[in-house]
Amino acid sequence: MSQAPVAPPGGDVNQGPAILASSWALTTISLITCGCRLYGRLRMTRNAGMDDVVIMVSMFFALLYTILITVAINDGYGRHMYYLGENAAPAIKISLIAFIPGIVSVAVPKLAVTCLLIRLLNPGRRHVIVLYSLSISCIIIVALCAVFLWTQCHPIAALWDPSLVPICWSPTVLVTYSILAGVYSGCIDLYLALWPMYVLYGLKINRDKKLGLCFVLGLGICATVAAFYKCSRLPELYDVADYTYASGGLSVWSSVEPNIMIIAANLPTLRPIFLAVTGGQTSTNSKSNAMQGSYKLHSVGRNSKNIMGHSATKEVYPTDTVNLVHPADEEGRGYQNKRGGITRTMSTTVTTEDWNEGQGGGDLEKGRGKKAWERW
Image (cartoon, helix red, strand yellow):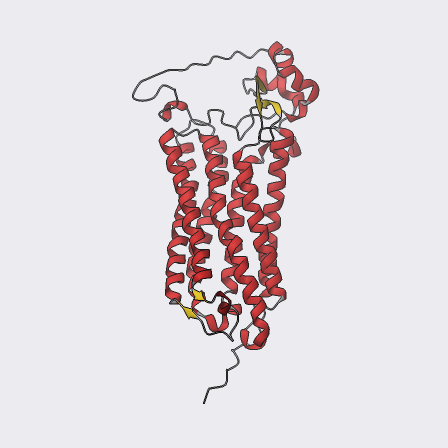
């Protein structure tokens, strides 16, 4: 004689509103920062790059996850299966589908951050290979979590249809692998946050500016904390009898981690917009800054094509690769290094006439004077 199911303690608790509030709050902030990033790169500096493309792909998957988890919550996700009964099937199915873009959105932002850091810090060829290898390997390893999730039972429909008799792996396989993948993901987040801080620590720049740069480029540490905490919630997947309620906390952190990473990747690119809003740097005070030795590098007169394929004068702006790190610190890029080798020297003289009438500078003053940005 089968025992009747027992009502869970606490009654019909609904985690849905809390999940929606946290997920949509972070997703909205991510969308705003992505929009500002695109505006700054496409309209202000006209220097979009591959890092912008990758971060938009990340934002797409993060937004898709939030939308799907919203649909699942409308079907009852976040409540105890005891109260949902047969109506739990749609909520389980949609939530499992939602975890696919959710898992992808955790890994792809790392590639965007890698592209940005390479653009900013100008590392050597070997380090570039290492950075790309870490990011791509993380995408592959984390993506396998979705494969294990959807192949753990045969037939697949048995994951949400209780009328089917499935043949399943032990839940330990999925949980253990997911924890290992989460730890690996968190470690990469930590490395991508600490490495630029280490590089900046050795630069001879203003202390306040150094601390500000370390803070902005080191925000990935927050993603590391989120990743490790999410790993502590992964054992919730063992509770298949009350999956819609037990995995509610995991769904929250599946939104927190990628959105924090996206926000952290966007903030370093928003300095031009910040300066435009606060009036920190305008064309009206460019001459005085130039004569005081605090130069703003406008166009350097080289035409290039941006990511949209349009020819545009490339402007040096705070997130461009403008020797933020001295080239002598890296090997293999045609600069003088510690082992000796080729030396490339560039000498630039800035005068008041050059500032107003020089190549590219005059055009900026006439047409886009307010879009001039000082370097970091």
